[in-house]
Image 1 (cartoon, protein in one colour):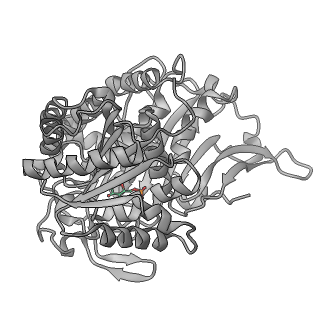
Image 2 (cartoon, rainbow, N blue to C red; image 1 turned 180 degrees about the vertical axis):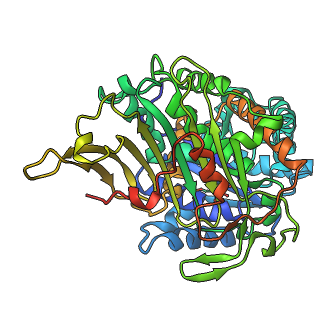
Length: 499
Ligand code: BG6
């Protein structure tokens, strides 16, 4: 049973001088601190190669917090909980020194041996670090030990298996918290509630009433400074294998018998097991890849992907992926799930559109009006809310119809809500709630699905670039739906305004 009080603990952050720590983790920890959601007994040890002192690190923490907030109370008091230790992740001696500091802070803050090891750094070191944590005795305490791992968890199924095998030597599955920050987003968490807490939707949530489901997650940004990583990843591994498939699982899963971590995860796993595999010559019928060329974003010219720093001028990496997924089970047989995600697109938005089937007979056809299908739109970001699209009578003498919308919008406090997502996930981890983290079975099934596609793409070049920056992707993605008689609902027509 969980208690509502956050347990005391030591957080050891590997990669503490990095971008993720600065932009997401420190502001999130601060928010938890300010809201009283961190136990007063907490300490953070930041480690990285740089030879910083505790003071330099604390100034860095303060900068990180103040860059996200105009006014931050008690930021000095907050930063005083942070300690820094220069560290070489491959050197056993470094871990021995780290253990000394950890044990000392454990005594000083009475942390009862509770430890969270947060790996916010290059994935090639995940295995090495977890080996050393055990061999140098950092996991040898009487409290809880949890390992938090950022993505990517492997590059394909084989490498993910090898990594998992290695970290499982030091941590059990229940001690491993694999981050998928989309699972911390308010409206992603809301999918379950919208579905299972409303009599209105669940009876219709199947292939008798739903014609298709569309998930769009588009970004205006390009690869920024991450080209080295992105060149080996592409949109399929960077977004589709994790965030997009996680949203599919939440949309398609059966109602769990209760809300425990195991029950929810096992329902999600069943969806991933039911995904119809797509491989070999079938891939072009189900998946479209794209790469942006030069174009215009917010009125300014931007370079094409191949011109970006650290990108191969002949790169075959996809910056866009669209796909059609079929889930072979009783509920979803025949209902396509269309997914698209990419960089340098026309809008920064994540939306889910559930399109219901047309009603059996349109009584209003003679008025010359085609009825619009009913839609349920779940707005994940930047706005957060839901919209239901219905048909109603136009005011006046005739029985003419007009589309109307019922909207619920909660204004997103932070614009793009990623920092808030991290805040929730860090808190969940402190509380020992792994529901919104990815289980190994989910990771393995996702890679198994994705590997068949990447194998085909890696062995076959196509003519890139094939979409202009500032657009919604290649034409082939429209054709993917058109051949089934559907189209992507334009994201700009689906806006929801905060009430
Ligand atoms: C990350 C990807 O997981 O998600 C990035 O590695 C991407 O490439 C980011 O930009 C998108 O997250 P969000 O929360 O801004 O939609």
